[in-house]
Amino acid sequence: MMLEVRDIHTYYGESHALQGVSLSLKEGETVCLLGRNGAGKSTTLRSIIGLNAPRSGQVIFAGTDVTGWPAYRIARQGVGLVPEDRRIFPGLTVRENLEVGYYQRPGTRNPWSPERIFDEYPMLAELANQDGSTLSGGQQQMLAVARSLMSAPRLLLLDEPNEGLAPVIVKQIGRLLDDLSKTTTILFTDQSVHFALQHARRAYILEKGRVVHEASSEALLDDEAIQHRYLSV
Ligand code: ATP
Image (tube, rainbow, N blue to C red; front, side, top):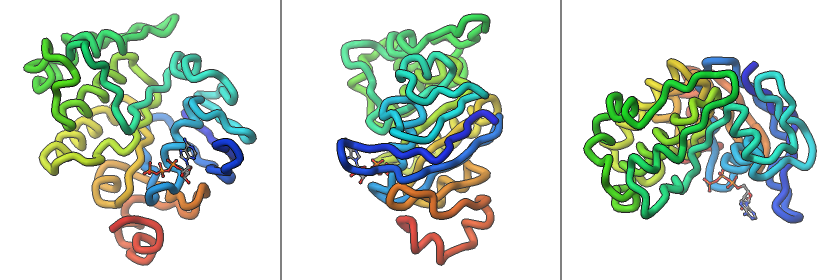
């Protein structure tokens, strides 16, 4: 298993946001975490990478129990996060934003460089010397994903990669996700089924901090009752 989340409970102060979430991903899988606003999707990703440590339960990454570790240490084990708000560094160029993302895990070779990113994603090459904060929302999202690639993560977490983006950009993000899924294990969140199930093989549905359903993408696409009950359609 690349990731095993076992019965985690996560709080914001006294507010019990995750009430026993369990899920798992095998190496190479692309899985989606679905659910409406406030269901607990972001909190689940933040719990996995240690930004909101669970109060109980376990997070096992590639066989190592990382529960309670600080986020930077979990990231260095090979977990990348593309947060919902993207966090592009203003005042740094696109190239510099990519350079900041570079990290080489001891004992491994990281093949990524800004040049390789530019070769693979020419849209970013054209923007290489532009201040990251001047990019459109879609361009910033591409940059945020590319920056997370720069650390060659073994597991990539993406929080609502499509939020607020125009359909043409959503298509590009979809292609990028499909490319990434050839080499990386991916867990991403979304509010509706269509994009998610096109790009993931399997999904978990969250509601009120609990996993209420798990199914293959095909099964979910056919299941309108579940879609209406738990998702924005
Ligand atoms: P969204 O699509 O809005 O990001 P989500 O499914 O990712 O939704 P979370 O952001 O994980 O949901 O929120 C889960 C619960 O935790 C919600 O009830 C939310 O109000 C609460 N919550 C999230 N962040 C905080 C915070 N910083 N302080 C207090 N409560 C929070």
